Length: 287
Image 1: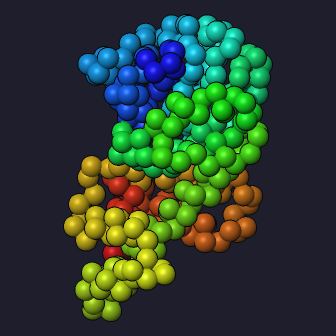
Image 2: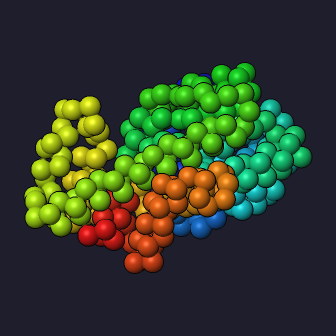
């Protein structure tokens, strides 16, 4: 059990399931719950306890990880589960729900007297499974220190953004916007190469090893060149949601024109039915 006690994961989508498998593989006692029960049941084969309700899941919990899709889901689950957990349980908010959503969750948690910290995940399913995520944390330093050994099992690095819940969320929106820019920029470079009658591979060769090089361009570029966007490690729909949250957090449209333009590109990709594919599929819109 590695001394972590009972760890609960509420929400077993792509990232919740990956975290559960990682922790179970490290000998941690894990209980899981998911609104669609069929998505949680396979984790029983890895040794997880599958609960029928959020309240049943958190009984006796030491740490509760929230890995849900949006703020509505987090608020709803908190309302169902909060009063069933021990008073000293630490709740870790890992869902990307934006600034306004995080404020709502903070308010609900405070109303129930919960201890809440946040650890925003940078990375996809693969890094979660291998324990190489980067976590952007925020909240009471003592509470974060208490869960640090657990967070270290699923991440290679924790970047503390400050002592209040919400600062990690803000940093996550900045980082995911940058990821959106990198992906869109790589796609645009390939589209321009085609328009100018050049081989797309020349772009990756030109930047390789230089100051402008980035492994991300090569990773997404490889998908674009192969015209193969499955399976999706980072669904386009998820990044599209994050860009919307970033724009909502930074004011009216026009405050950050590059963000506006990239969000518009991902809007078009969603309209083309590419939402469930890898974010590299944004290249199809440009090409």
